[in-house]
Image 1: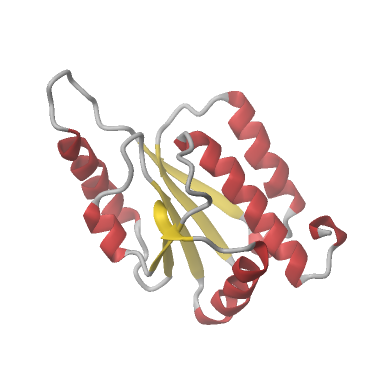
Image 2: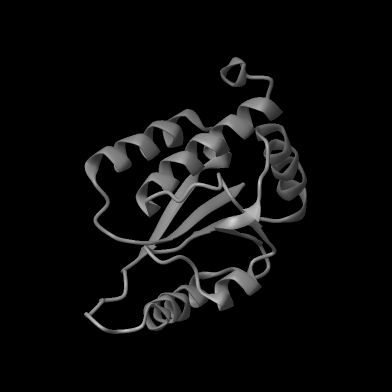
Length: 155
């Protein structure tokens, strides 16, 4: 399964890279996680936030594979348990060649990205820094794989 995190934000801290790599190396080769980054829109004092969200969304859209499964990471999305996520992955691996998770910048995802996504997932009702979401996503993907493969990690 081709799993991709499409994320706004570059120059992630080393501890984020280390955290994501830990879960990448635990996953088998057919469940690899790739991260595609795009830069945060340059913010200037007094500019409307919507302008930046729109710019980031406009640049994210060409990176999306609409024939794959697109999941927007959004605090207003559905809350899934780990078992629910593993069942989604079980279905996705038969129906799609690629699953993409969209992670917005400091102000979230554009309406265009949200409406293009097949579904929205909230890791929590809390708001997380977008770099931490990468680690949480990588861990949950690994955990879903472990459930599907009866690996003891999930227990």
